[in-house]
Length: 115
Ligand SMILES: [Zn+2]
Image (tube, rainbow, N blue to C red; front, side, top):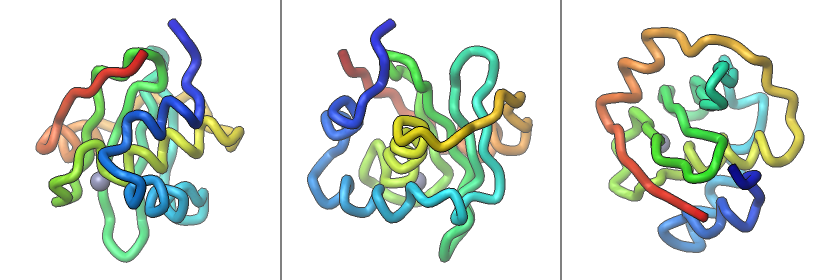
């Protein structure tokens, strides 16, 4: 398992605008809840202008990522922002993902991989 870095996150992004947008998402004040489960899966409820539930594996390869937002870009800026928060050293407590978060995010489950 290689460790997630900012470069890996940039490599996942569909375009450079997504990275710029993800930086604004990677603000702890915009999250009503955040956690990482025992398997290293980050999850959160984003509470910006809209509310979305999402999760993303924080381990390489990130084969599980999901977000309830309607963006056609995958991974979306919320997933990228969540990963950036984790990489940026923001403390994220080990917590089981709430069932409601998983269910909402699973509506838009997608896979991506990185080295
Ligand atoms: Zn999203």
